Image (cartoon, rainbow, N blue to C red; front, side, top):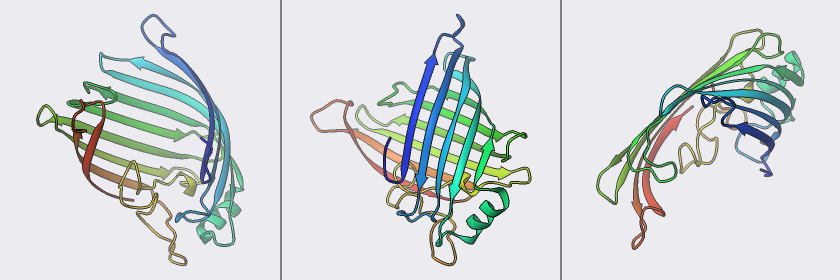
Length: 241
């Protein structure tokens, strides 16, 4: 994904049947670049390199848990218009930091269709902990609950709720580049990406934060003359950081 603000190159491999019991194994290698100088988000840029090993364990017909361990090296660049907090963070902890993220996840997928669900419930919880031994020590937790209700054979109501919380537990605190953001496609539509939550008092740019919540209500209906393989929707979104 090569874009002006967010650029990501990832190579991922997954063996879904690493064992006969359905345990999966995979690994990821990536290079990510973020540059917020042309957005409403407070100015900084980052370049990250890393990789990790992950496993997935089925614990039921519709449930699974995941476990992963990785290594990440991130270099931060600040600018003359960057918030003083960003500049001070780089001065105190260095421009390049190494982290060792441990990830745990649980998912339960009871939807009747992956692409065009009409009924069922989906849940996902995840926890990322940067382990001691790296330069950064923090954790990020999130939970999502999504429920689909068939109103008629053509109309489906979707209810979605998400919450996230992050904090530092060591000397590094929570790195500002690990903040949550909300606004835009995928969270609260009608707002520019990342433009909900705290702002820099000097220039009004958005800083993100360590607590995020989003709620969505969406009514899906098929295009006239077609089946459910192509749908329109009307929606109401709310959220903040």
